[in-house]
Length: 302
Figure (tube, rainbow, N blue to C red):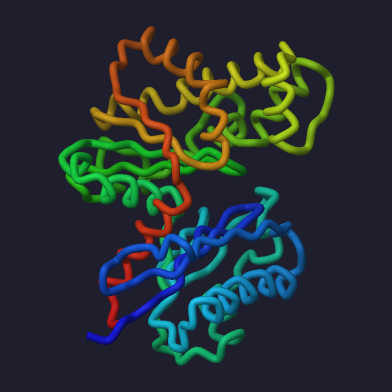
């Protein structure tokens, strides 16, 4: 059987993680996992330069002469069937609003019209990847969330993504759930975390790593900002966990790396609400998203 390879991409607001996917065995070529950071609010041409460079460099480094597809995990709002960006006023991909990423990629690489380019929500891809990489999770009701520049959610029952019905929010999304005077993502995201610190200390930080370092250095306001973040997270997801009757909560995204700074506050709130659930921090959330979205290539002719 001829070996077939695709590119998997986890598209974040400030970076892309990409890798070569062995489609025959549906696994990631681990040594190919690469990451590039950039400002997604640059011009369309400049952002696409980053996209093109990482794809071409992977193909050259691993001598992939013919790609069999591209699979992308992308945050919403996004038309995953057509490939159109509808992200607006979220401080990421501002210049891509209304643009079709499939067309942009075909133009860059001279792909044929029928070249397989598939996409799915980044949180959905992450959730599927986390479930499928551990067979024990296939029988569980799993809620997976991603914490970063945005807030993503995914509900999986018996290995199947659930995004309709009375047990999950509309379209299975949690970022836009009403919360306090705005939406959930206003509080449970990097901007919400940084806003906590500003409200507590009066100081404005622009990078999450700076707040992370302050907390580990013992800054009381920074520690309190993370605790407040954990409480907000609990208030957003507890109703979802109850409605879905979840057995497990998996937390991924860049902010998951700071889990020990906010999980205590989260678990205290959950305990007070009568929630007993297995909570897991993903150790490789981006590769989970790559694996999850790559499964879509099974449904197309590659």
